[in-house]
Amino acid sequence: MTKRVTGLASRDELRRWWTRFLERSGAAARAWAKGVRGEYHGLTYARVTRRLAREVFLNPRRRLALYVLVVASWSVFIVWGRILVPLATTPYFRPAPGFQVIGFFENPAGGLFVDSLPALGTWSGILDAVAPFWYAIGPDGALTGDGLREEVMGLARARGLRVMPLVNNLKTGEGNSLDAVRDPEARRRAVQGLADLVVARDFDGLCLSFELLPPEGRDDFTRLVQELSRALRARGRTLSVLVFPDVELPPSVSGAFDYRAIGEAADFVILRAFDRHWTLTPPGPISPLGWVEASIDSLLRHVPARKVILDIGTHAYDWPLDPAAGLVEYLPTYAALERAVSAGAEIRLDEASGQSYFDYRGAGGVQRRVWVQDARHLAERAALARRKGLRGVGVWRLGFSEDEALEELARALGRRP
Image (tube, rainbow, N blue to C red; front, top):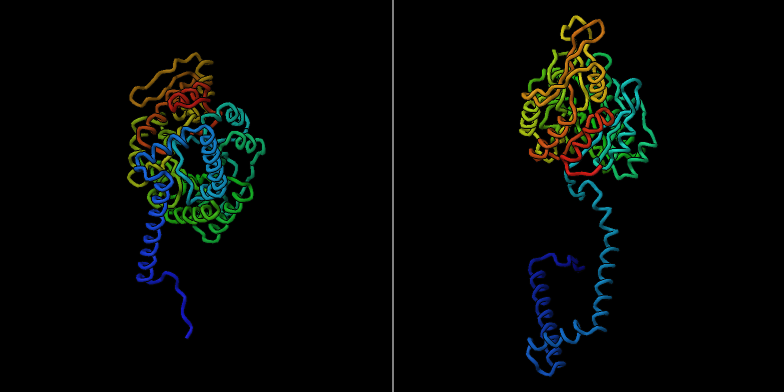
């Protein structure tokens, strides 16, 4: 009969093995103790300890040997670390980072929409990651646009920043590319294309930003997030999803977001806490402080704080006080403040919202009001994110603010530019 080999399969064998191990260990310990006492001629253990200290640890020549032993031990530890480091970089073993700052990046688009690269070069010291707006998803799920710039990649890598491109939906056609999430084949194409992209370009992850999807796309957008998250994690990358809050905003803006399901699937949820008032509303503060806090509290009912990043705007809106007298204009903050100086307008602080505004007369004598997200706004909302225990903040976008704003942010976070 052939005996089946099972090693330590049974409890009896394990018990017998453990008993033999203890017996042999005890015998070895007793033999060592006997040898030590024999070597030191029957001295007590206290006297043996003192003699060991005097002859080994206080002996200069033997201290050198001890030092060599310690150095050798540390060297072995470091060598083994070469094996442990790759494990630490996988999504399953990577330690959770501390408070994070993401800089959203834009290529130059002409006019007031300047290149974010100079701001990235100047302020990279306060950032942990950069999210360039380089790609979009069309209605058929195909990847469109490739604004990748090697100088941006090189600068980010040289400064130790993670690169997580922003991926938008195209705001064209019915439902703002709703078919990209509603049609299973388009969704599969989008997921596969983005998963291949992060590997080919060696990105650290992606930031998914689908805006103004109709509420009926809620479940399908959640499926896109879940499928993309699985694909990126399988490749050791992260997924961040940008959402608008559900406080005082219409379903056309927030109705497509299942916050709990998105929070469970994604690595991070980035709360875009701005545009409470925007081009389709009457004039008003863009990001009232009380509204931001209420929006954070609402999101934290569904998503843990360790996953939430507060996105802070650095833009302004310029409204005609008479809606029939002109169009609302979107401006970078730096341009809005320059407009105030040019018009000789006094910038006021609205205590209720914690935001700045000014009035001036535009072309044709039209009375206009500009609400601005300036330096004070950025610092106060970053401090709020810290108080709420959030994972970090985002700056929307690099190059749009006045320089003082990022200086204030650095001071609020205790970071050096």
